[in-house]
Structure formats: C-alpha cells, structure tokens
Length: 237
Image 1 (spheres, rainbow, N blue to C red):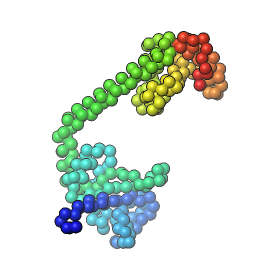
Image 2 (cartoon, rainbow, N blue to C red):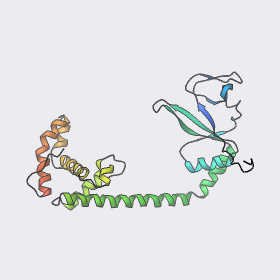
Image 3 (cartoon, rainbow, N blue to C red):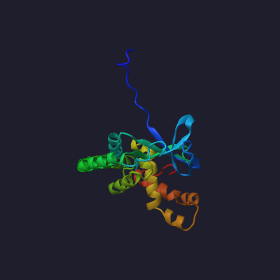
Image 4 (cartoon, rainbow, N blue to C red):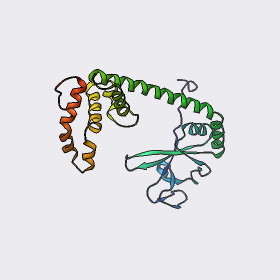
C-alpha cells in the first residue's frame, strides 16, 4: 500500500495521573509527595509535570462539555487528567490540561453562542416535559381501564406521583412505561395504602413495615375491589 494513501492514525491522548500515594519523579529525582500530578513514561517511569513539559498548562475541570471540546480544539498541547476511584475500581476523568490562551478563546466562543445553546436546552426540556405529560395521561387512562370506578382526578394524581421523573418509583420502570397491568396495579396499591389507610400513621408509631402492611391489607383490597367494580380481589401485594 502506498504510504501516501495509508490512513493516518489518530495520536492517543496524553494522560496525567493524580497519585494516591507518595511519588517521586524518575527524571529530576524530586520527591513529589502524595496527590501529586505525574505523567507515566513507560520504562522511564514517572515524570513530574515540569519534566514532562506540561507545567505551563492550566487545568479545566470536567463538567462543561462545550467548553472542554473547544479548549481542546484550540490547544496545541493538551492532556487528560485521571484519578483512581476506589469505589469503582477504575480511573475516572477529572478534566483536561490545556494552554491558557486556548481556554480563554474557548470561553469567548461559549459566551458568543450561549443564547443559542440556552434556547436549544429550553426546547429539549420542553420536549421532555411534553413527553412526560403524555406518558402521565396514558398511565392515568390505563388506571381507569383497570379500575373503572376510580375517580378520574385520583387516577391522574396516582399517575403523576408514580411517573415523576428521577423519582425511582414504579412508574419509571420499563414495565410501567409499557403500561403493564402489574406495574400499574402496584402504583394504585401504593396510593391506596398511603392515602386510604392509616398505613403512614402506624409506621410513625413504630410498627414494623410488614406488620403494618398486613394490618391494612383488607382495607386496601376493599378499595381496589370498589374501584374495579367487583366484590373480591386478589391480595394487593
């Protein structure tokens, strides 16, 4: 293959590590202490930022994707900063070392289009909100299908509570989003237990959760049977 036509490989990112233990620069022999920033140079060992010729760079913490992307593009020299996470057993990105002039230019670029990016974020938030409103409406309709005697306002209240974003409640599960009967039933049962019975008060009085559930089970079943329009209903669960 002609070398001219060979695809050029992208160079790997330079990496700087924040150490968790006492370190020493293998080039200048300087004791660096712990929590210092070093660059690993293969068989040549660890280098401090000065010996690695990176000490003129400034640190840009992770968090602003647009600013990071632009600063990296403007910076002739850059390095990814990594730190070992004991909890996750892996190195995690802390930010980027870039040239100061590149960071300043990136900040100017971001300021210039902040309004446009804010409008895009606003439109995206509106879109997500509209999707959530539609989902809550479908969930409430599904409740009314399964429990036709449940008041419409109550069905809406149950759906809004169960489907609240980032809540971790049953309405955010994949099954609930598919309007699975069991997932919807669990949301209704939770509402009845907390609103239609003395469940919360008994918990505050120090009752064991399982004992409280057993004590209100008949009351829950009675409400569900009423809303379903039947005399008997299986255990609420």
